Amino acid sequence: MAPAGPRSGDAIFASVERVNAELFTLTYGAIVRQLLTDLEEVDEVNKQLDQMGYNIGIRLVDEFLAKSNVSRCVDFKETAEVIAKVGFKMFLGVGASVTNWDAEGTCCSIVLEDNPLVDFVELPDTCQGLYYCNVLSGVIRGALEMVSVPSCASLSLVFSSSS
Amino acid sequence: MQFFGGSDISPSPPAPTAPGNNAHMIYVFNRNGVCLLYKEWNRPLHTLNAQQDHKLMFGLLFSLKSLTAKMDPTSAEKGNLGVPQLPGQGCSFHSFRTNTYKLSFMETPSGIKIILVTHPKTGDLRDSLKYIYNLYVEYVVKNPLYTPGAPVR
Picture 1 (cartoon, rainbow over the protein chains, first blue to last red):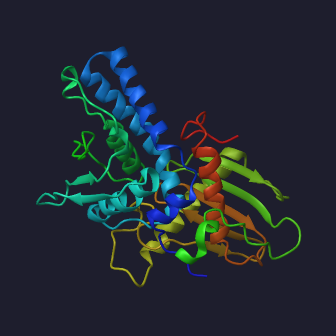
Picture 2 (cartoon, chains in turn cyan, yellow; picture 1 turned 90 degrees about the horizontal axis):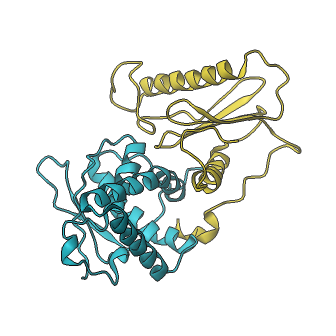
């Protein structure tokens, strides 16, 4: 029997267990708030969020591979496409698009249409420079490392948010 | 494959071809060669101690993968024999059969290898291996108390 092809992000998202979106957003906000209180330095918080994301990413990649059935991507462009189209759809339920490829094809931007993490969030002036969604870049870094795509640790965030 | 619908997530394992327990042994390795899980149900002959057995199995699979990729008639030349291949790249073997047993193998891009040794008359076990991988994800990866790279008890 021929192996099944890769499944679409929508189909998988519809079939996994989901949590309430507001619960997720508010929990994440509480985490960031607590980190800011504990660590006080914006850079420390960024690093901690990245580390948390990394720990999530190294486990997430197995679930992603098991549910989505994608085969190994041929090059980085395909990898970025798969992350944006299937990965984000499957776990966050939002679509993302890949833009801003540099000349060598080594660097790109993934733009989320509608970031669920930043609903209801306003950054005060004391926290400029905080990468609020740094956990997402940590997740991607961890996941890519487990499939042997060496990626640079400082993925800078170009997530467009509604706020 | 949209028409399979939601039930395709955890497909029920295919029915065994013979009555009774079909499998002899199962191994699960991670990308560094650490044996995460080893279970045996029917192994009359033990020739090596556990450590050597795991190392032998891992080495066997590593060499077989290199060999099958190198001998692939359909792909372009991809480096010399012995150069480690990324998991999933090139062609990958999925089973071999002897007169006494059949060994089925599945490797994920993240380096998790699942090996099942069964009765030689067993059919294609790739779906069962995928099902086992789903179980691994569900219960091992999602367990907050599990550290990646540690053996599963």
